[in-house]
Length: 505
Image (cartoon, rainbow, N blue to C red; front, side):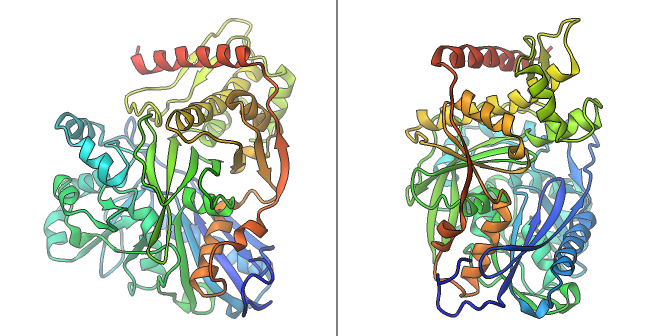
C-alpha cells in the first residue's frame, strides 16, 4: 500500500491481515503505506492420533485467529472503524466439515501434512486416473490435498453423507471455515487458490469438476462458491473486532507470499520456509503440467484472469527445528540453530538428516518414506545434528529448484521468506546448495503482506497489484561460492540418504 499508487487511498485506511498458519495464528495491521502498526500471534499445538495422522482443533483455529486479530488492533492503538478491509491467508489443504446452522465442526481439522488417505490415493493411481487429474488440475493423487481428506470425513463421521445430502453440512479449507464464522454464516465462499488445492477444482475452466467430484465421491453441493482472490467475501460482524469490516482478499499462504514477494512476472520465484518449504515460480497465463514431480498450480486470480505457477512442496522445514527443540531437547530456542551451525563451521561430521517425518513431498511424492539420520558415530555432537537438520531443509529446496530448471523454468534468483530465513547461515547454505543468489526482503512477513495487498485491491483502494513492487525491498543478498564439484558431491550424498529413507528398514 504504497503512497500514490491509487487515487482515493487515504492516510487513515488500514488493512488487517489474518494469517492462519499450521502452528500459529497471526494478525498484522498495516497502514496505507504498508508499514506494520500492530502484530498479534497465538501459538498452538497439533495432535497425532496415529502414525502419519495430523489433526487440529477447529475451535483453537478460530479462537487463536480472533485473539491475534484483536491483539494486533489493540497494540496498534487504533479505532477498528479505521480498518478498511480484512485480508485472509491460510494454511492450505487442511480440511474441515461442519454444521451449516451451528457452524460447529464435526471432526478435528485434518491437516495438510496428514497421510491417512495414502492407500486411497494409491488405488486412484493404480486405477489410471492420475493423468486426467494432472491435465485438469496440475496436481497428483497424494494425501496432501483436500479432496481425499474430505472423502474420509464423509465416510467416517456418523451420518455425514446423509446430512450432506440434506444440505445440513458445509465443507472447506480453513479460509472458508473462518469466513463462515466471521460473517456468522452469511458467506460460504473460498478463493480460487484454495479451491485449486482440493483435487476437485479445474483452475483453467474455473469451476468444480463434476467428474473429479464423482471420482472422489464428494457432492458438489457440499463445496463453497469460488471467487477471485480480490473480491467481496462478506463482512466480518462487529462482534469480532469492534466494527463491521469487509473481507476483500483471500489466498492460500504460498500464493499470498508470491504476491508479497512481488513475484508478479513470469520467471520470478520465491521460497517460503515455514512449517514446510514451498517454492513457486510465476508462469504467467500459461498452465504447464510438470514433468519433474512438481505441481502446476494457480498462482492467483484477479478479474477472472488466472495466473499460474510451478510449485514444489516440501512437508518439513521449520517443524524440523521445532522437533530439535521440543522432542530432542538439543536447542532451547529456534535462534540457537545458527549458533550451533557456526560452531561446527558447517561440518556435520558426515551426518545426513532426512526429515521425512510424514513422508516426502516434491519431487518424490512418497507418503511411506520416514525420517532417517545417517552417518552417526561416537564423535557426533549435538551441534552437528542441528547443523545437519538445517542442511536437510536446504537440500530439499535444492531438489525443488533443480526440478524447476529441468521443467524449463530456470531460476535467476530465489526470494526467500518465513521464520527460518532470519538465520544468515541457513540463507548462505541455501545459496551454496541451490547455486542461486538468495535474496531476503526487509519484511519477511510476505504472506500477510500479500493478503493485505489483495484486500486493498478488493476494497478498491488500488486498481491492481503493482503496488507490491514498491513495497518489496531487498535487505540482504547471499551469493553462492561453493564449487560445482563440491555441490555435486553434497547433493549426491543427500540423494543416497533420501533413497535409504524411501526404502524403509
